[in-house]
Amino acid sequence: MSTQIVVLAAGKGTRMGDQPWPTVLAPLKGRPLISYILDEVKKLELSQKPIIVVGFMQDKVRQTLGDNYLYAVQEQQLGTGHAVAMARSLVSADNLVVLYGDTPFISASSLKNLIQAQELTGDKLSMFTTTVKNFEEQFKPFERFGRIIRSQSGDILKITEYKDCTEEEKKITELNPGIYCFNSQWLWDNIVRINKDNAQGEYYLTDLLEVAVRQGERVNSLPINPNEVLGINTWEDHGHAENLL
Image (cartoon, rainbow, N blue to C red; front, top):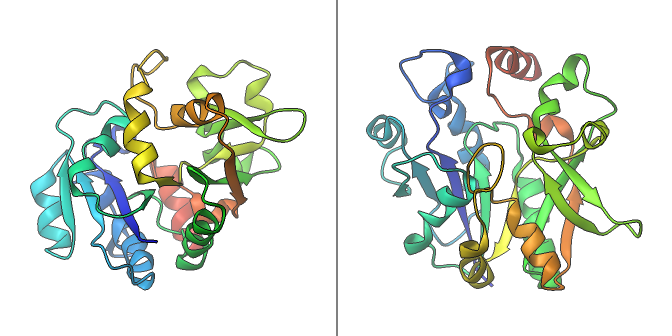
């Protein structure tokens, strides 16, 4: 069973101010953010080339990363679901892992665990969840993450993005870092079912989880350390990342 990686790298990164580069090229200890995750992807030694979804300053991203990747273009920033859809024509593997170019600490060993879990169970969707003890100090950046909503029996029912959360849901500390492994055929059959009826007006990839639940599919989840899924969206996040390095 084959697996391919897609890295979402089209965003402008407005929360880091007016900078001469997109978020994924922000320097971290002298290296572009995205280079850290791509180093870990390389360790997986997958047969299919990784796909980079580019948009803002796409020429600069391509020039920095070179010819070792396939590139898909997201002209309009319409959300994660839309970004993944832009890569469809380049996907040639049975399973597709979705990653973000601004999460520099994810490890190859964790990604291998996710891929192996997907292959072992044959589920349509496998994902990481992470749990924090609170949203203070070093855990403050995680406050913006979507919340994992589970049934009384412990099954994942849905993911609610932070801007769509009720006050009660904001207290949930099991979070969605947004890293998934999809069965590719199931993904393409169902990505058309998501809409942008939410606070952001975007196509959320997370909505596919509810689609799977409605279809009676099991959503496989694996825990991951919060430090591995820290995203760099603000200069405060950037400072915390430098401390971790």
